[in-house]
Amino acid sequence: MRNVLLQTTALAVILTFLGMVACGGEEDQDTTSSDRPSVAETSEIGKSEGLPWDAIPLYSGAKLEKSEPCPPQWRGCEVCESRVYLTEDSPETVCAFYKDEMSKRDWDRLVFQSYPEGSCMGTWMAEMGDSSGPRVLLTIGKRTGDNSTAISIAMGRSCP
Image (tube, rainbow, N blue to C red; front, side, top):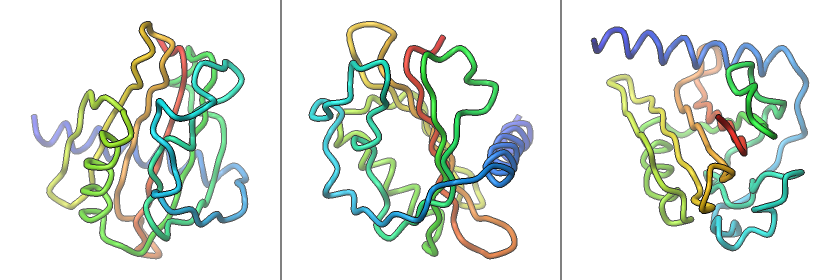
C-alpha cells in the first residue's frame, strides 16, 4: 500500500512539473509570507473571476517559476490556476512551514501526507458556507537536475 501511495504521488508530481515546464510562466517574484493575509482577510474571496493567492503563505525566498491554468484533473472547477515556486531549502523544512502556516491563515486542512524522502502533499479548503470555497493542493519535493525544492500549488474554486 505504501509503495502504491509513493508511486501515485511521484506520478502526480512528475505530471504537474512536466505540464508546468512545457508552458511559459511569469517572472520571478519574492514575497514574504508575513505580508500575506488570511483567507478571511482576502478581498478576492467570493469573486468568481479571481482566486485568493494573497491568502496562501509564500515560503521566504521562494521564486515563482511557472504559472498556468490547472491540469485536466481540475477541469470541473469554475476557475483554477497552478503555480510552481523554487527554493534551495530542503523539502522537509518547506513541508513543515506549509503544514503550520496554512492553518494560521484560516485554511482547513483536509489531508497532509509526508513521505520518507522528505516530500509532502497536502490539501486545504477555505470554508465559504458552501462548496464554492477555494481548494488548494500543495505538492513539495526535490527537483531532479538542479537539486532545488519545488513547491507546486494548485488552487481552484467551485470544484466538484
